Image: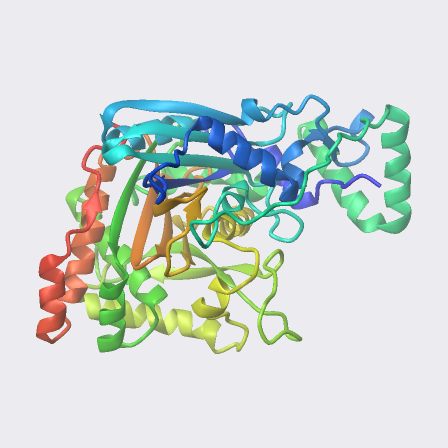
Length: 486
């Protein structure tokens, strides 16, 4: 029996537009392989994906509509699957700068994926300074559910410099179903899951009749409220089809120092840093930041099922939490305490998953966890929400791609209609890395916001005591891009 797209997957396809592509991405930066005689080039990446794509069979399938759209579409094998169409090669003029890489990322992420093919792409970017290279991956949110499918970006990574062995791939595409077989599948599904099929049929009929029942949840209602809030917040915009992207890299030890002094969690400190950055950035724009001003952030969090001591998968175990970032509060410590109080409600339920447990989930890497977080946030975000923030803990040891050590990993979280900025955060190998995805027209000052992040972290560090922290801060120089996609 064919796998049918869920109602959530169908919603992602329905609400996608040139202004709001529904894919999530990752930018990973690597050094040359640790073994001097080895080389990582385009042919190496293609061979690596060809060897391991069997672990993610959905990445060789495309979306097939049902005749008459009596039910939702199904996943079918792509008989013309061409791995070289999906794995692409690009290069920067040597020595390529970080700013040039970010400009390329912004342009790649602005383009929608081809609906006639499997919904993913991966780019090898050569020519970076120091003989480094980058891998940019993007996958449609309908593709990654965290249960049957993980993100393609994680299958290229290994925990050691020696690539793990992979089984021989004997895949042959199944013959595409005929119209009669597709319709027969509808009746079979209706017998087994009548409610689910009815829900999918309603969604399909809504799109055919012009009803906005699906879009009202995520898209069209935004338009009616953006005009009201546009004057109040720079975060609510008329979303264009072009993006800016920039990154900020900081030290994980700095967040731990703040946590040790003031309590809470590392995640609380990250959110306090983002809150401080929003406050400073709004002030540079001349916006009011009165005592009651806040930024409403959708922050996906992981949970465990009641019967599980620790999760073994995350497909349905990520939920959206809302945190009001107190940008009107002048004191950085009070901002942290207010955020910790809000997040404590989730922790007190007893279903929260610790960062250590999350990192230890077998088969999951930050790239998949960000895809799941973005998927949940996209499905639940409301017009009154200002920004999506995904914060995923990663391993505190280096990962490798065919022996090449990964230096940094930056998430690219998609924008929702009417929102000007999304924030992705990954902790990896002693660093906390921010990926800032913004509307190109609405946020020409994205580099200013990036600088505000580092300033907000410094502001919190200034509240800690001890020469060790101050010495560490003197050595630390967070990296941000001054010209992000400009």
